[in-house]
Every structure is written in C-alpha cells, then in structure tokens.
Image: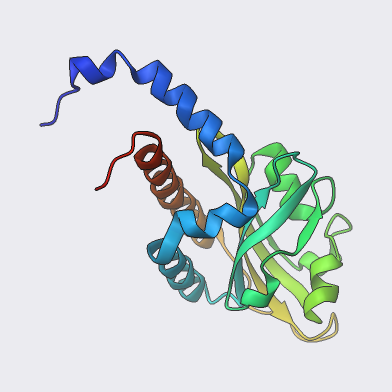
Length: 190
C-alpha cells in the first residue's frame, strides 16, 4: 500500500493551485499534445465500441465564449471548428455539467445545425458528457451517429450503457491530462 509522503503532502494545496492555473491556460490548440497517441487511440476505440460515426472532444476557449473541436475521429478536418458556448446541445452539456444521451437529435429545437451543415449530414443520435481537468469543467466529449437526411431511417441510437462508456472515457482522459500537466508543472520526466 502506498502512503502519502509527508514532505510532499504539505505542498498539496500549492500543487493543486498550480494545476488549476495550468489547466485554465490550456488552449484548444494545446490539447491534442496533452492526450497524445494514447488518448487519441482510446477515443477511437470507444467510438468504435459505440458504433458511432464521429467522436469529438470540445474544449472551451480561454475566454469561455466558444467550444472548439480539438479532436475529431475519424475526420481530422473537423478539428478547429467551433460553436458559441451558448448554442446547441454540446454547449448545454458544458454549461449544465450534466450528461446527455439523446436519439432523434435532429428533432430537438436546441440542437445546433452548424455541425450538420459543416459535414453535410444530420445528427441522428448524440451522447455527450462534460470533460474535466485541473479541477473544473473544461469541455465536452461527444459521440454521434449520423444519417443522410431527416427522412432517412433512424440509426439504432445510444443507450445508458453507451453513455456510461463515454463517462468512463472522460474520467480516463481527465486523469491522463492531469498527469501530463502535473508532470510539466513539477518538471518530472517519467
């Protein structure tokens, strides 16, 4: 059993503050390097297990005016797209810090059509969860199923089981990002 080191424990509040400052300074452009290949591979594996068409990580910009796609599987061209933090279901997840699992998303008036217009498809189903690091919500992880038009048959959709997988993914990525930030703050080469 590992026990806390008393010499290090007395510095815990200062380390937590430094972690929060570092997390607040992370830009959407910085994020991809923080999760690295292990995080990107994990995102791809979870998306495939959900039978999703796309999985994205959205990070709030430093001013908290928009959410920016920092990772998108399988379409890297989607990276850098943004939407106002006050618009759409993904932004609702960010603001409320509540998970969302919804099928027939295209029927929801709160759904932002920006992404649908950008990719030329209709969002049929969405599962999204808030994403934390540095002790606060920093963005959203979302997975979608798409279809060609609103008239096309609906996909199987998502369930609570799918939502739980995305929540676990969020926790894994949070720990990875916190570890990477702490390693940088403490100048550790592990």
